[in-house]
Image (cartoon, rainbow, N blue to C red):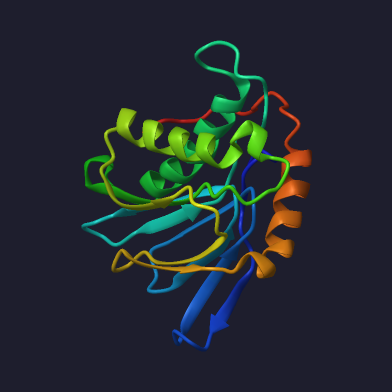
Length: 198
């Protein structure tokens, strides 16, 4: 697996929802066929929750486009975003999902990171994910994008249900710090690894 997208390993039991849950951090993704929950907290980053509506197999990623100076139609930064989306979609297809049954819900892209507003990082991430899904012809059933709040997203792939909790700016320091660290790590390196498209 390329270092830009890691399969999340933080699985715990969630008392509130009485089920297992996988927590994903920036740059991670997770998918499952089990009746469990995938949770993340988003600031300027975006998450796509993608599932096969027939089998209930689904997953979520959490990424941002690095600021790679968007010269050319397919900038390094766009390739990075495509990679984050393709890794999740390909893993779902390998696990038995059917491309024509995929549906998506997308979240995040808030103007949360002060000092990032000049680049409109959140907006760019949000626009990218919508454009990508449109090109892949994966219907977007719900979205909660942009705005100024960090959000906590709970995704139940089996049913497709998503709960979104807007967080106050004051709870936001850890989110912002985590995303800034992630953004620094992202200094656009070439996106590696050939991907098998199913």
